[in-house]
Amino acid sequence: MSGHLSKRIMKETERLAKDPVPGISVTAHDENARYFNVILAGPEGSPYEGGVFRLELFLPADYPMQAPRARFLTKIYHPNIDRLGRVCLDILKDRWSPALQIRTVLLSIQALMSEPNPEDALNNEAAELWKKDAARAKEIAHQWTLEYAR
Amino acid sequence: MGNTTSHSDLSVASTVREAPANEPGEPLSLGTRPAPAVETSASGLYTNPTDGAFVQSSSWPSNNDSGAGIGSSVSWLQGGSGRAAQPVPTMVHAYTIRNELNVRKKSVRLIRDPDNPQQFLLEFVFDSTCSGLCTVYFMAKDATSRTTRVEQFHFQPLDETRPVPTPFEAGMGQLYRQNTHRGFVPQKYRQSVLFEQNLTELSKHRYPIVILLQRLPNADDEWAEQKPPPRQTEASATDSGRVRFQATYVTLTMPLKGLELAEEIPVKVAQQKILVDGTIYELQEIYGIEERTGSPDEPGSGPPAVGETDELCIICMTDPRDTTVLPCRHLCLCVDCAQLLRVRSDRCPICRSPVDSLLHIRNLRSNAR
Ligand SMILES: [Zn+2]
Ligand SMILES: [Zn+2]
Image (tube, rainbow over all chains, first blue to last red; front, side, top):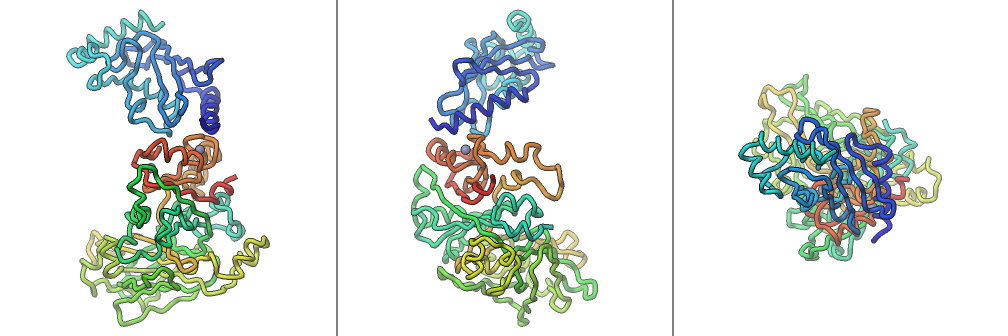
């Protein structure tokens, strides 16, 4: 791995600390600079509002040539997030570009919480309900938020 | 207006910052014998950082008509080497030179002559670091030699009247306004010819307007005298490595009001070429150079983190950007990360379009410090 790329990780980490994103907290792991603890505030106006969601974010060895991996540790009811907390997001897969950053990834996840995409489901059950009865689905999401995302 | 001192400095980045946007007298990159893969053609490329432009061209575009137009970046890269068929993009190196002659693209206008309303007069702003001649051709055929090395551009105007070269002195932001005796009468020509936009067609037939700036041989120019360092003296001793001509190819659009009523015919600079050391290079845009320099015309309008984020490579965020992705022309990488991108990805980080090759502009980096 080029030292070049690890400099990038340092820069990103520094910048996240210096200029944090509202509603998002990122802390690098003490022993592993590629592993981050993330806390996301549930976006206003979404069923996740008021919730505090914990995620883990990991940068693979050839980051940023490869996308980071992100996973919800807090249980969440969402069509694009499965039971293991894995997130279905295009920029984490084939739409990844090294121009994107940890910051942009987390902002995109926050945006996904505000606007689920039931057409591209990872949690089929939630996706079905979201399509059939969005109000009911949001109610469940909100209940889960109250229960798990404290 | 760019002051002369800024032009006596070969450094790209620093010069650019002080100079007016899009304006010349500025260093350019001149590509050299790119990778061995493309060496078959005496090709080169050449960028104009001020213009956010990059130029490339093979020798004079052989006979395949590809010399004209944006598509030529691709044809050049593929030129005779078959390299493009391979998955790994080519790495091409360029170095910078100064552009001593330049028509400001956005300044070109074709305005109705108040004294002689059936004709239109051309005007534009140009910059030159030396004295020279300016010639405007209407409905001209490009008869420049198609051999590898050319001494100068040749244009054959349709009109019996041969255009008269106008002498100019060194200076930035000079206004050229056409003499009323030499106006352009569009009604004389067929509209299909007049308003053709396709560069390939134009190159086969006639260009509505060509502006040719020529530096006079051995012209004493200000910067050569002002600049003490040996590098410059060397350069001024001969014409080697210096821009001798710039040709600006202008196309016309039918005015909304029609030719009879319009006060002005909309024009567009379709292409610019320069001649250096017997080789013709074509100027094209590079995206990203403007960003890193901000816009000198509107102070404070540039990106907030000028000098930090936007000048740095998008991948490592550490080294200055000096490598452009082709054919999309996004200047976003340092040369080390470009090497990495070559083998690890086939997409431009900015626009995700497929990468044909990567253009490393040498002096951008060292001078950006
Ligand atoms: Zn880099
Ligand atoms: Zn691009």
